[in-house]
Image (tube, rainbow, N blue to C red; front, side):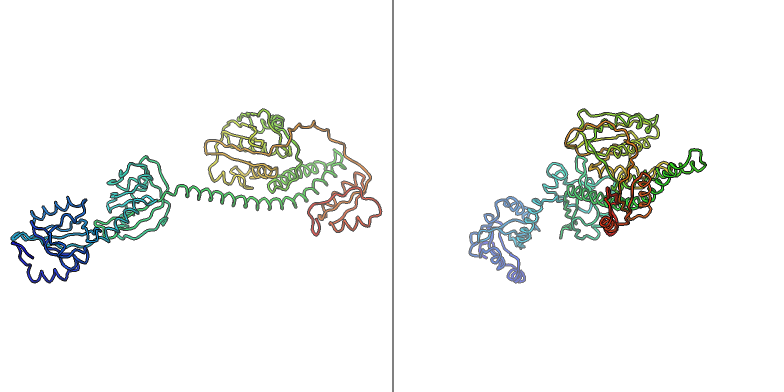
Length: 557
């Protein structure tokens, strides 16, 4: 060193000065920098010769000069400063971040300073801040006490607040009130043993916006290293759309599963109904034949009539089961639903009962649909009965028709007790009923669904507890406007002498059909299956005028 105030440092200081890995300098209060160590040259590039002028302030970044002058004044006053940072220009022109510690020897006024190069650390911090600010997710930095210290723009957007409005607020304000106590406990446990928590780890979460609305979120947590006091970065992602899609897919899966279950039950019901129908056909036909041969005063007639009535009711039950399985034989024709409802009104009023008002609202210019009128009557009656039973204290059943898209719509709405989600989900299941055993079989709505689907239609249900139920069925519009034909008087029972080939693999059914036809005067040839029928057809000496055949049989349909 040179100058009037030069005083070399002690020998120990000199050794430390030369071997220190951190930049060090010696400066005079009035004359500026006078000496730098090798580390200074390595970090900043400046040599002792470069510093001959004693300059120092002009190498401080312009934005940091004011703070640097303030620290210099503090050093003169207190004799020491510690941990202040500024950017210093290197010989290459690039700025390096330095963290300083300085001491002042007042007699004479020499300053001894050591700097730590923190450029890499500050660059990393800058990179983190840029990523923090530009992140597509909401970022919050939260302390152990739950106070938010930093946010980014996406957090302001997600929580619908002014920029920076969340800073200084408790993160608990973003948690639904019912979960705040539990959230505080979770936060305390997290800070006791901090760990990185990945996005979507744990249960579904909901956050509260500043305007009181809620938003579905996933959250990731990461403790910030070297933060004092401890801080945690919370990353929140808006998953409202994803949750809605997941719920929609889940609902579709439930509906698909319900459809499969209904199909399986329907197939079982139809299979049972087919066999049961064969048995009851024999009972029904034989009881009819016996009634025709029995005098009205015969003691056995009452029992035969009871058997015949029971077989008729069983046939109706079989018809319902076949409808559930969509296996009944339909006889569709162009049908005017307004006319059908008008003709059914007296029956529907009796079904509804005195405590229920029936209101029919037909649409003008209603299109026709190709439907089996008998089956649609069954649909209407079942829905009206169901509506009536949902109003034990009375109410109103409204039947409405309308044209919608390319379909004819029929809606039956009641003012009854309504249904919850579970009841609405299961309402079309065969044998599912909320009624007493004596009041329902659980086949009414399953029958409705079967008939509607087999008729090419769709069914829609709206219902809430205490707000009634609305059931709408839609059928494809017929190509032309329907004009229902005038009713035809029943023709007399046919009789004849022609030859009929009866083919059925059920012995009892084949026997009773043959017996009925023979009683009507026909010659009957019976065949047990398709192959048998072909053999008979090929060897019978005379003509066969008609074949009456079962559709599905073993070996050959």
